[in-house]
Length: 294
Image (tube, rainbow, N blue to C red; front, side, top):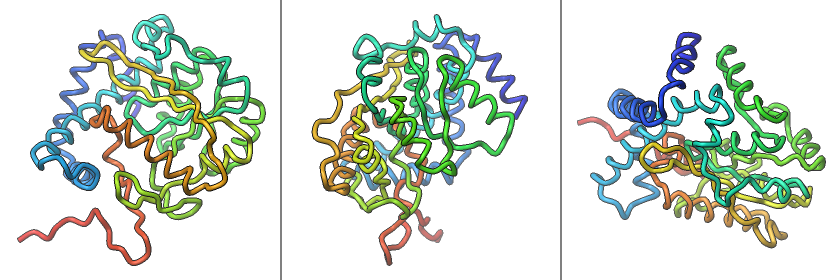
């Protein structure tokens, strides 16, 4: 892992078009070399985008592997490049991070799992402190680099799932914006089965529940690639009106519908290699079983 991190550090000095094309090439190779992840990706696309032909889904799956690989290698720029370089490469929509709006009251920054989500974190971290949940890495060297990369600008509070909900609530009450990544399958605990692309998906209701408890506003933020390897676009969406209301399931359904719309705008950049539909309602079979070989 130390060799890999050293290689990433060397590569971050490359011009982004060169690094991006390298990442895309590696992604094309991984599409061939990782059949289990390819199977998960294609299964997700068959479930979520039945209107596409199988050939179109294969093209989209390959593009996703390329995008995901790019995001991993380009992360070296987020971790080690100068702030001036990052500011040149990140295009903000609107033209600046809405710091005053997101710190005037408790704010949940809703950040779905697009491959460039770390870019959104960097864009905010260069302007103001924030907090976020992160998955503690098994490799200690990589975990240290990850934490350092995400906290090298303004102070950042990073929580793990083991920390529970209380630190998040305290951060929000202190008006520290909280990055919420709400769209992964963590099982049935604290989740409801809510449609995602028409498929019942175990979805955490935490966004709605935390907003209801703390009075936090929900401001979505999504990062995507700019064309021609020119950098990234970070878009801050308007705060949701009348959210969450009194029905937590309806609020969670509203969240999933918003994410669906954004996925359709940049389908190759959503995190399709995750088993989003792994948890099934009682009695339903797995959606990821491979067909038996003849």
